[in-house]
Length: 316
Ligand SMILES: Cc1cc2nc3c(=O)[nH]c(=O)nc-3n(C[C@H](O)[C@H](O)[C@H](O)COP(=O)(O)OP(=O)(O)OC[C@H]3O[C@@H](n4cnc5c(N)ncnc54)[C@H](O)[C@@H]3O)c2cc1C
Image (cartoon, rainbow, N blue to C red):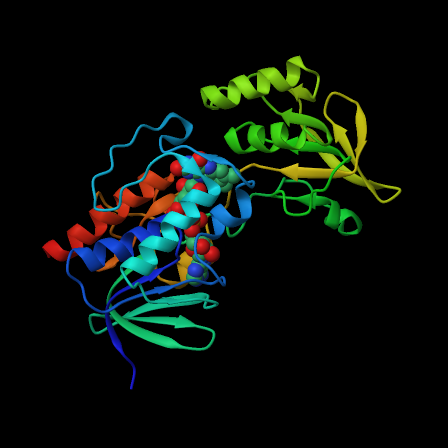
C-alpha cells in the first residue's frame, strides 16, 4: 500500500533541505524529500569550485534569516557539512536517485511520480532550482568540440588556454581561480562588472594587475568552431582566438517542461506564477528557492522561502 505523506519536497538543495527541516520542527510528521542525484545540494557540489568562499549575503543581497535554519558565511565544504548535519540530526528521509517526472492533483491529494515509484502527499514543495540545465549560448556548440566546452570546473586541468564567459560572481570566481594554473581570458559582453561583490572585484583587479588574467570586455562570441580539435571563438569585434577550453558561467534555465507537466501556470517570461506565500495557483503546491525568483537567489533567500511556505501551509 502506498504511504501517505504530509509533505513531499522535490529537490534537496538549500530550499528543499530548509523546507524539510522547517516541516519537521514546525510539526509535520511524515515528510519525504525526493532528489534526482545520489546526494543532496547538487548546485553547490557541481558548480562551486573547491574551497569556494560561500557568502551569506550573496551578490549583495542582504538577508535576515527568519526561520529555524541558521546560515553563516563559510566555504563550499563547510556548507555541505552543515546541510549533512541538518539532514542527519533531524532524520530527514531523502529518496536519492529519484527524478520527479510529474505531480498531479487528484481529490485534494498530490500524486508525485518518478521513473520507478509513485508517492501520495497532502502538500508539495518544489525546490529544484535552475542549475539542472545551465544556460547555453545562443549559437551552436559543434559536437566535435563538446568535450572542450563546459559549464563548471569539473573537466579543467592545468596549463590550458581557457576562455571563461560571463559577468557575474561565478564567472569571476572561476576565472580568478583558473588563472593560478592556466592562461585565462574572461569574456563579458558589457564593459564593466556591475553585479560582482567587493571581494571578487578586488580579486579580479589583482589578477588583472599581476597579468594572470586577460579581460576581454564589451564584446561577444558570435560562434564557436573546431580548429584542429580545439575551440575557436569568433568574436563580434572581428577577431578569432583558439582556446583549449571554453567555460560558460551564465546562470541556469527554468525547467519549463517539468512545470507544465505539473500544471503550473507560467507568466510571459516563462516564470512560474506564485503568490506572496510561494504558492502556485494549485492549492497546496509551493515553489521555493531559485525557481521562485526571476533573478538572483541565494542560500539564505531559499531558506527564508522554505520557512515562509511551511508556515503558510500550517496556518491553513
Ligand atoms: C557558481 C555559483 C556560486 C554561488 N555562490 C553562492 C554563494 O556564495 N552564496 C549563496 O548564498 N548562494 C550562492 N549561489 C546561489 C545558490 O547556490 C542558489 O541560490 C541555491 O543553491 C538555490 O537553492 P535551491 O534549493 O533553490 O536549488 P538548488 O541548490 O539548485 O537545488 C536543487 C536540487 O533539486 C534537484 N532536482 C532538480 N530537478 C529535480 C527533479 N525533477 N527531481 C528531483 N530532484 C531534482 C537538484 O539535483 C538539486 O540538488 C551560487 C550559485 C552558483 C551557480
